Amino acid sequence: MIKGDRVLLRLLDYGFRYLGLHRIESFPHEKNMRSVRCHLACGFVEEGRARKVLWLAGEWVDVVQMSILREEWEAQP
Image (cartoon, rainbow, N blue to C red; front, side, top):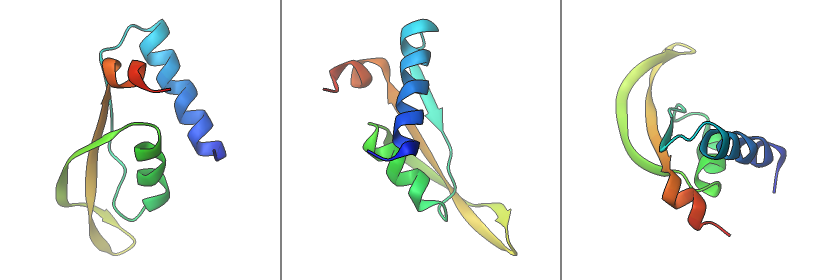
C-alpha cells in the first residue's frame, strides 16, 4: 500500500464512520492516473467522464467521476 492509499483510506474512514456519510465522490482528471488508480484500489467505482471539461497545461482533459458507497466501504476486508 502506498502513502496516497493510506491517506485516502483514512479520509474514507472518517467520512463514513464519524460524519455518517452515505456516499463519497471524487473527480480526478484523466492525466492523473496515479490518483485514478489510488481511488480504484480503495474501492471507488468509475461512474463516468466529463469529456474535455478541464483546461490543463494547454489542452482540454477529461474528468473522471468516481464514487464509493458506505456499503461498499463496509464490505472491504
